[in-house]
Length: 209
Length: 211
Image (cartoon, rainbow over all chains, first blue to last red; front, top):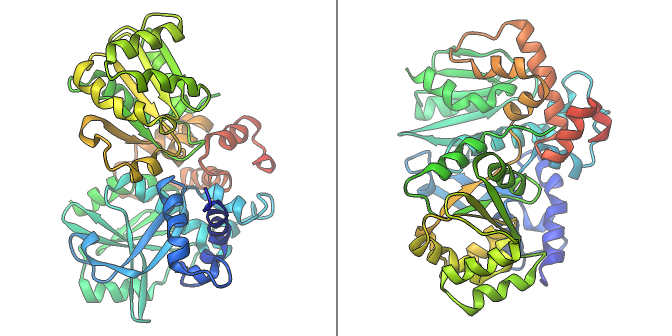
């Protein structure tokens, strides 16, 4: 068990990894001088223990998703939003007011929650998609014969340049946005309130009808 | 209180399946694997024979000495203090990753004793399975347990609202009254998370400061 320390370093670094704007997992951010080849076994241990989820970056939103992974980039989320909050040492009472809890911490908690919910409903592990500095879509899911782009909006601001860019480039029949707005289906865009994420599969089915 | 889990119905399906194979329940620690299996034993079987390979390391011998499942079952019956009966007893092998011979024996249970209900679980099972190339994947049924979902949490907190939640089968906007109460309950879940322990405290005490 010589990897125990490494597992601990990775675990403790997850909040700071997710606090960065692009949330990409960096081995250098685990510990000064840390390299991938020294730490990837420890990371694999966390994944296999079911404690974290690894979300790969997708090169191309094509079927099957797994065939287009960009091996150079991925993000690491926790298996549970409450665990992430505690690991990040955010006091529960501090942000019970208003909608601060969704926005705080660069929206990481909200993204983590949506990922958890998606993992339970869809068989294929979600990916994320990024195009050279132009746009980034939080998650891609493979559902039946389609790739569905997903945007997570943690505040009232629901404008999304990235999802629009993705839409113009790939024209998916359904695109999904999670936000604090009410349920809405309008010209290919399905807005799902955060609390309804567990019903996503059913809502997407209804939208496609 | 205890949360009603969506997984319960899947476990019942496993129990009643005509092609039942030994079950391997995966999932992180503290997500409720053992409780789910014990609950299944209580509700769907006449009795439960629970073995924990972490707490009772001596059990390992039974599996090292022989591959004959009937002899293994005889020995386990003696430890259990009651006869283990096909279809009537749920046999739980907890923390099975601590005993590789038991993990391998699942294959023999599948082949020679399919009428016995064998369910195994372990929080570090995923790691063992990732390393064991010889594990008989096709001879077992895998299922995975995750933290409580918001809808499971809601069922424990507010059954009426949970019933409404599950009845949503159209894309119309949610009426404000429901929208606001759902958002309020969701915030509680969001802060607490879905690990059954803290969620239980929260639902029982209604005090967010405790989680």
